[in-house]
Length: 361
Image (tube, rainbow, N blue to C red; front, side):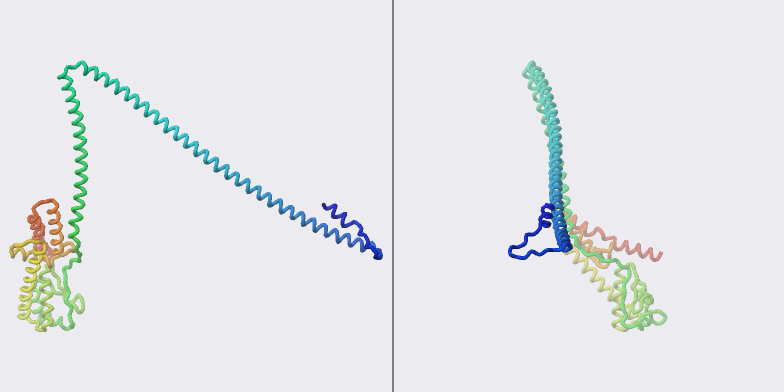
């Protein structure tokens, strides 16, 4: 191709007809040849670049096809290996199944021989002997079936009992959704004026001494500014002292006679509130005809806390739970109700007495 182009470029051009022939010099001729040679070289380079590009593209296509074929071969090889593993697994399964069948056949043959021997033995027995043997066999089979049935029923009953117990506890706990509060041994009374502390103390401390003697509560006037701290393990005494002090501050007449009058009146009112709280608790749980003294002791729970929970709410909660369980178990509901209601009856006085002994001892 290059040769043909070169010859075509170097071939002398025919002069056009009817035109004068121009004689060119050697230099001009040489320049034209060089120009044509450069053009031939450039064209040859373009052709070479094109051929090279086409060759590289074809090589890439061939390489891509080879990679695709390799992937297909790898996939086919993986599928063949998977099928081989499946065949091996099936072969092992068939082998196990064959062994199991052979074992069952051997057991069946052994059982058949035993049955034949048993029949031969039975055939030689008399009617009474055969009847006795049959009854013994039936009794043995029934005993086995009976034991299996009893076992199954025991498991079923146990499961039902567990489910019933869970359901019973859930139903009982529905009655026990109460709030918890923190248990305190002190109360605070705010003072409208800091100068009131001097009037509460009184001349030579007679007022504060009278308050402490009548209420059995310690009055701390120095711990917090603008407040008086009342300290006692007995929540009822602390409540009487708090209410009495608030009333004395509001009244303004703070003297021993007025203090004694106010404290006694407050005690009567607190006693009435205690009895009313006990009566309300009994009615809320459905316990009627409760003696007044016991009702009063139950009412003390209004001012008593156990493990952070008010004892009125605690008694109400566990009594409701006990009654619910008693209904489910079909036992005497009234007995359970009274037992739950009075199960903490001695805790108030006992715990208060112990705390006071520890405090004074």
